[in-house]
Length: 145
Image (tube, rainbow, N blue to C red; front, top):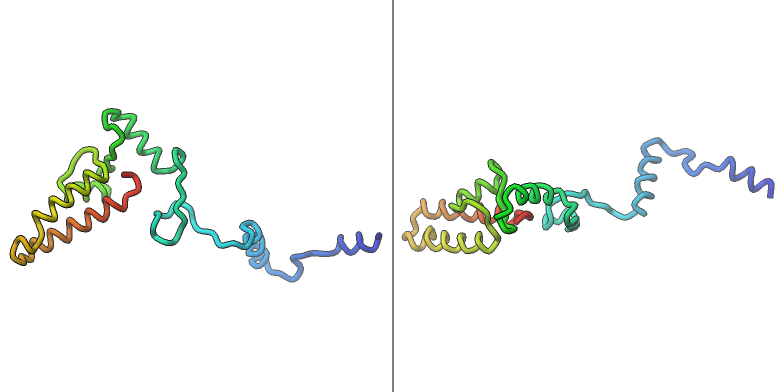
């Protein structure tokens, strides 16, 4: 039994490995050799799982701050000034709080109004519709709404 203790004292799992290889081994052991994804990535991009942190989510702090300042908003979302979402709201000619249903309704109205088929193939109408489509995609991809 003494020889086993002596062997165990001299044994080093990491013997012969470089510092980088040791670090790689330790990192893989931390996650049980399973792949991981970075947290905070947008849901639906395919590069991360969709994790909802509820009231502890990063976006929720800003949303609660806005709601505390404007309690009459009744749970509706308002974009930060200068953000892509605010620009998209301007394209959709919407101001104030909005829900996804409000955005969908406004989008349908604008598509009917600006569709190239209703303007006999006018290129300007086609460009306006492209801008409206981009704005709609931006707003619908926003997780905060």
